Image (spheres, rainbow, N blue to C red):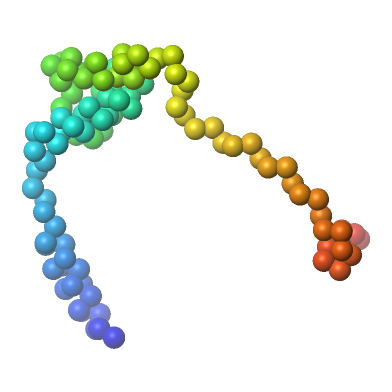
Amino acid sequence: MPSDTAIPATVMIAAESIDLSPTEPQQDADAAVRTARSARDEEDLVLLLTALGLPCGEDDLAALRSHLATQAGTADRPDQTMEAPPCPTPSPPPTSSTSWRPWTR
């Protein structure tokens, strides 16, 4: 088993190999378009872009307005929030008297 000092050194070596270079402008643009497709409206889009650290100036928003779900002809589709599925009907208890007994006092 490796010593306690070997584990942090291994982690440190692995961490140093991770590329932390800034994203390219095309990656930011692609992320902004994907975000716009998920946004409910322009206000939601601004909040999402800000949270992700993506540009959200007036020029950026103008380019993304056509990707908003309500602008892309999808306003008539139902809200895409997921509802909890209905609870299944419980199955009846087993009929064998040895496998199930009601709780009594």
